[in-house]
Amino acid sequence: MFINERTKPHDLLLYEALSARTALTKEEFRKFKTYKNGYEGELMYDELFDSIGHDNILIYRDVFLNIDNSVTQYDSLIISDKGIFQMN
Image 1 (tube, rainbow, N blue to C red):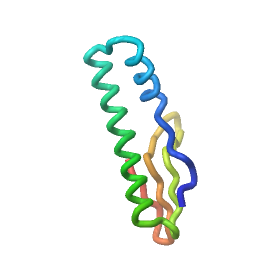
Image 2 (spheres, rainbow, N blue to C red; image 1 turned 90 degrees about the horizontal axis):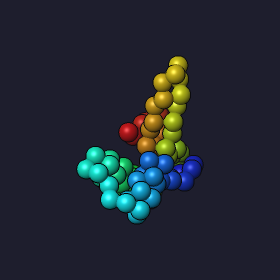
Image 3 (cartoon, rainbow, N blue to C red; image 1 turned 180 degrees about the vertical axis):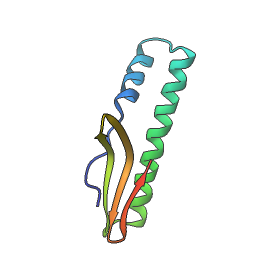
């Protein structure tokens, strides 16, 4: 079961808005493609779980942990009877 909805990252939203208003520099375009490809990959991952089923597991998406002034982001945390698995 998916616990939360996946949302577009703020950086991707920023670059989408920026690209609609002006020509991006090479560096901005590279970052935009990186964020876009990453988000699209996460959506494909979600579709895969939907197709094979996920009734006996819990899936937390876009998890940010702030521990000792260090932030870690996980695309997904999967919790089952066998343990906790992370997907970056």
